[in-house]
Image (cartoon, rainbow, N blue to C red; front, side):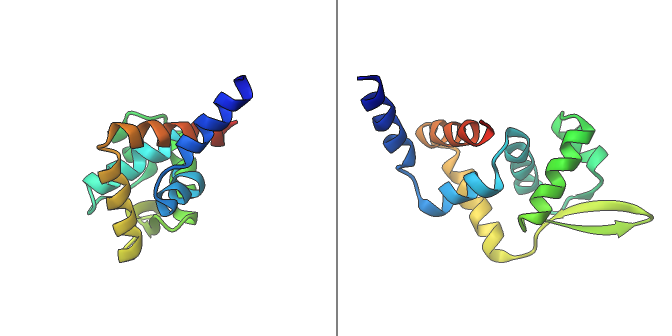
Length: 125
């Protein structure tokens, strides 16, 4: 009975837009990244250092920088050098920005958030 429940729960969690599911599994696969994506969505013109972004988001600087670099590798953010410092900005690619908008909009739905949280936790295992 337990295995049948687990299968049912897993199937329920898979029931989401495939592009958003992939976005969560491959790009926003930690709660820090989720916070950072929301931060850049809400502040699309931000160009700042990891230390400042960590302060704005209430996260630890080292972990934030690691996740910012990961989001850069995933094409969500871009980096540039300003006065010997690495500065992070939201990617200018309109497809990426549209996907971020869809994700943030979907997060307004409680059921979607539950599914997204499930996938982030599954990815952390």
